[in-house]
Length: 321
Figure 1 (cartoon, rainbow, N blue to C red):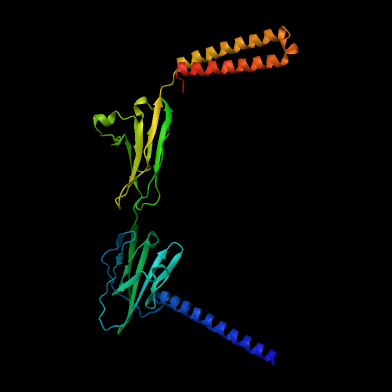
Figure 2 (cartoon, rainbow, N blue to C red):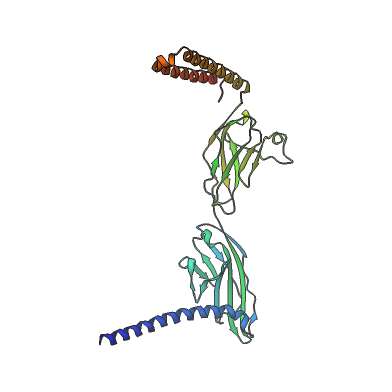
């Protein structure tokens, strides 16, 4: 009896599974037939579908309206479908009188157009409105393509400014943010004043600029930095959407390279090392290392400390960074 119950239960499960699979296949086949209907029916004729705006732009988290208009009679039975065209293929957005995918719960029909609420950057792309209707001449079809671009305000950029540099060296600062759409442009400031962009037809003041500012990439390049370039720098990113964003202020200190001071310091250090070496040689010759090893070790440590102090004083006198 239990075996008979198990067989019936297995048959019932197989029947339910087959029914579920059949429903899925049925839906997919209907979608496939809808795709082919534009080409497979010899009685199909084209119609004119219009849109108010083929290139729709909307700010992120606001609404966007994709219009799609036709000239069918009001009493005619229409089939309306919306699809999104992506690199990986075409997907349904509105099919069988309901929205699918990401637009479910965020979109509504406006006659044959679409209103999308709370748009996000993922909604950007190309959409296609398809309308078909039965008439005495046969099935009539039409379509319109609309491009939606979601505009995104910039985020706080990341700035890289060296804290110190030597005169005559190459210094490059960078500024970048990746969230803005369209891509942001960048403006650098020094001590709160906007830096000028060097152009071929610029003013006399701009002709004396020693740096190159690229507003597209956000770089600020000094081919030969000078002490006059010392200051506090920050960058501002903007793309016309929302408020511009700026990074925190960072200071760059430019100092001269004291070549003569370095030479004198090297000479002093060399003399000190020679004197200390002679002292060690004299102590070894007199046999101090064999007789009073501990005392000599202490003297060597003192001499090393002596060399270290002379080096520090030399660097401080000539202000070598």
